[in-house]
Image 1 (cartoon, one colour):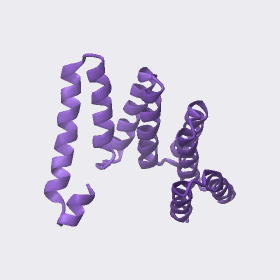
Image 2 (cartoon, one colour):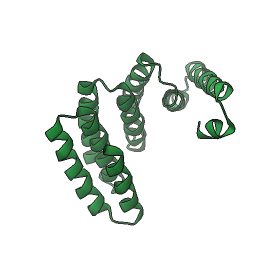
Image 3 (cartoon, one colour):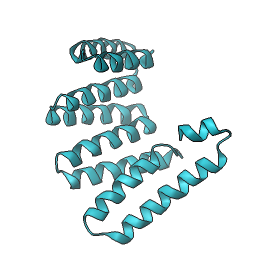
Length: 168
């Protein structure tokens, strides 16, 4: 149950016990490898990359996220791949690697669209719009924001309850 490991690792991080979280994720990753579960491996590897990023190890984190992307592709996990792209692009931008962030976002958008995913896609679109705006590409940036807005409007309009709308 990967979600249990991820939740426990998050709790350990919040308690300033990152090394324990890293050990827990490494054990969970070994178990996922033993079972041949590529999707779980991708999620756990991403979480390890995020821990490295929080620890200021940007280069190691990006390398780990590349491994997570490879696992997600091998698993056919487009939702996982889109989530990895979102996190990796944020880290690339922080490292002043905007061109790589753009390539990563485009890949994440492609993965998200291929499966009709509607929750991560607006975030990917808005990050790409922000990159394009920083380059002075107002028209393309505006088109991306309109698309993200349309998706969110559709989600909010079709949400079944105030609780569901609040979760979007």
